[in-house]
Length: 293
Image (cartoon, rainbow, N blue to C red):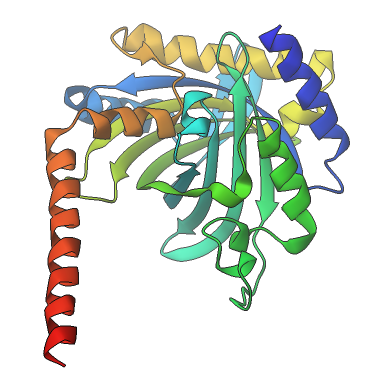
C-alpha cells in the first residue's frame, strides 16, 4: 500500500512538472564511510576515476570532476512530522569555487521500499525577496515563489504537515568531491564523496558516498534507457563495494542521519541548555534595566 501511494503521488507530481516546479526521480546508493577509511577511499577514487575516458561493460564514458560546497537548512514542525516520514524540506545554497551557482527549495519525498528510488521536487527561489508581509518573513515560504506556494503547501498537506508551521530544524554544510560520468547525450551518473557537518556546536560530522543516476535522464527515461542507466549505476556500486567491503549501504536521508547524531550527543544537549540559560539571563538583565528606568 505504501509503494502504491508513493507511485500515485509520483504520477501526479510528474504531470505538474511544467507548471508547479521541477519534479524528478532520483536513484542513488548511499554508503556510510567510516572516518578511518576516508584517506584510503579518497586516494582510490582519485586514482581509479581519473578525468578522461572510462569503460563500463563496453559502454564508453567520459569522466569530469568537480568540488562543490553546499549550505543546507532543513525545516520541520514542532512534532518533527517530516523527520518521522523521512521527508526532507530544505533550502540549499550551492557554491563552486566560492561562487554561488544555485539556490533552491527542495522537497525530498519518501523513498521506494528498497530505499534506492526517491522523488524530489525543486522550486526556484525568487531573485529578490521583499520582507513586506508575514509570508515574506516566513522561514521557508519566503524562499518559495508566490506562484509555487500553493503547490508547495499542497505537497506538504498530503504528508499531514502545515507549511505555515515549518521552522528551521538543522543547518549543515556539505563539501562534495564529485565525479561525473557522461555519454554522448550528457551526464548519466555521478559518484560523490560528501563531508557533512553540523553548523552548530559541537559541529558533528560524517562522511557519505553517493552513487547516483542523473536525475533528469532517469526521470525522462523509457524502460530501455532506465535499464541502461541502472546498469551503469550498479557497475559503479559493485566496483567500489568490492574494493571496500566494509562500506555500509545506508539509505537514511542526511536530515534523519544528522538529527540522530545530534540527539545522541550530550554536548548538543548541554549547548542547547546553555543557550536557554543565556537567553534567560538576558531577559533578567533587561528586566532590571527597565525597573531602574
